[in-house]
Image 1 (cartoon, rainbow, N blue to C red):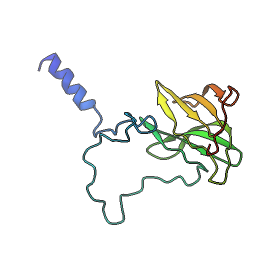
Image 2: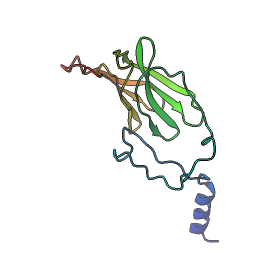
Image 3: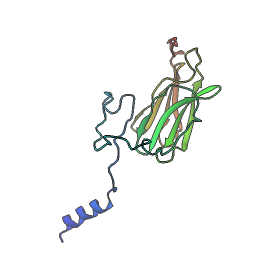
Image 4: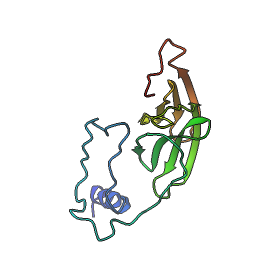
Length: 160
């Protein structure tokens, strides 16, 4: 067998067994059009629905959408006093890390963050409902920088 053929065989043999879902790194997905390129999805669900992989009812308050990149799901949630950016392990739902974004936003329509994190070039960006902007290392959650849009002259809208 030729070297190129052996190299190709090695690449094929070491490649992941199944297809990996495409990343969804920000609000609206990779093209910001809410369209998924996934194919081969179930046309009909089995009785009782698909099996649940994990559930996290303890994340707290808020209206954040998820961003998914690789084996991590990034989401925002509020606790009794603060809003946080969390990285969850896709396979298990366990928290990989959590970083405070800013104080909890409260109003009559529901408390907590409203934004979807954005992941780009190994960084994750989160905007809290009170205008607190955080940039963290996507792998570790280490705070790289933060800014307050209200300190820069912005105002918190009535809906956060």
